[in-house]
Length: 242
Image 1 (cartoon, helix red, strand yellow):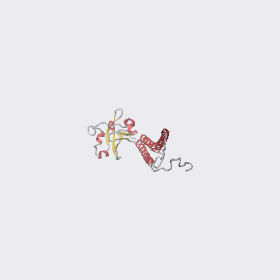
Image 2 (cartoon, one colour):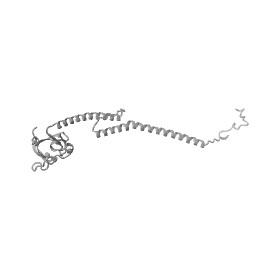
Image 3 (cartoon, one colour):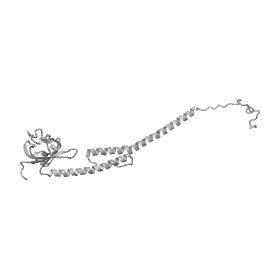
Image 4 (cartoon, helix red, strand yellow):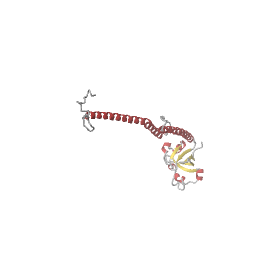
C-alpha cells in the first residue's frame, strides 16, 4: 500500500482523530426510482385486483352452485306442489351441508305427503263411487249451508247438475216453513237437538223449474274433527216403487 500510496504524497497518513481528510458525495437519481416504484405499484395493484376479482367470481360460482341453485329448485318444487297438490317431484342432494340436509328433508317430507295424498285420493274415489251408486239422493254441505257434494239421484230429483250447485246455499232447495224452518234449514240445524238428527223429516223441495216435490229427508252430522259437515239423504216421497 505504501508503494501505491507513498506517505510523502498521500494525506491519509499521520492524521489525528477529528481531522477531515476527505469527503464523498453520492447522488441518487430519484426520477428513475420513482418510475420503478410506480411501475412496481401498478403491477402489484393489478395482480392483487386480479386475484380478488378471481376470488369473488369463484365464490359467486360456488355460492350459486351450492346455495342459490338448490334453494331455487326447492322453491320451485314447493310452488309446484302448492299449485298442483301433488308431491311427486324429488330434488338431487348435492352435498352433506345444511343445504343438502334441507333438500333431503324436503324429499322425505314430499315422499310422505305423496303417500298420504294418494291414500286420500283413493279414499275419495271410493267414497265418490259409493255416493254416486246410492239409490237415494245425497247432498253434503257445510255448516254455513254451502253445498259441496250433489250426487246423481239428487240431480235427477232437483234438475240441477252438480257443477251448478257447488258452493250454493242448501236453503234454496227447500220451501221455507212458517214454524220450524222460517229462517231456513241451515239456521235451524245450528240449534237442532240431537234427537232431530235421528229422525226422518218430510220437507218440500223446489226443483229447477220451480215445481215442488215432497221429500223424506234424514240429515246426519259428519264429525271430521277440524271441520264437521252435514250429509242429507233424500228420497222422493211420491216416487214410484223400484
